Length: 254
Image 1 (cartoon, rainbow, N blue to C red):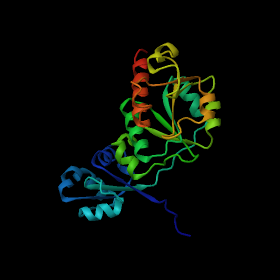
Image 2: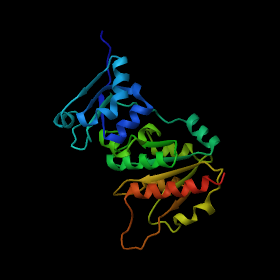
Image 3: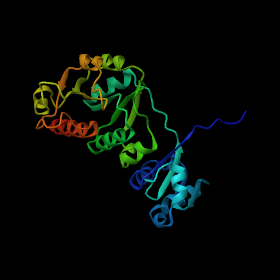
Image 4: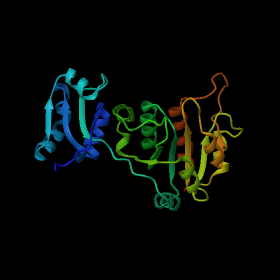
């Protein structure tokens, strides 16, 4: 029997591919770029040549076909479709011990939002993002990689089969903060709710329906971002950035 290969995922966008080349060149099976991008990926081409892997200058139309996107920015790297590890209690215990800040996405359904959230997580040094197998959760796609602008290489993505199991497993170990625009507490109250040595999980809900009722009930605190009231709530990726910035400020006090 022949060796079974996983499906490939195109990674496109200049910053996304540049970070992939720098951090994890071993993941790249094939690399394609326009003549204008050839100099920027010269070292990557040498690496791939040494590994006897394909690299090639192509036309923009070829990149559109490879990436299924007009937003390729002159380069496409092909990698094996990522395998997302399953979260378990040992990982959760490690976060609790390290007083980590992690992010859980409760059915965030848009790949661009997922990518933007991962970019913010990388910017603020958040080690992990957890997604759920439950619909309509977005998966790791070409557009998520591109919008993450290289953030995928600095954040570990985990998945859980059950939102309720995950939140129960964190009980008493990690403080669970849910983003809910109907909460009476606002973001400014976080320093009074948390200590710098406290492991924290930020939970962001679906773009349309917000947090599930099960998530709300399991949270230790529900917190909103105060606004003018003209618009009810922020985009989930924007909200995530503000929550992560607030948590980063608290944990810098350690």
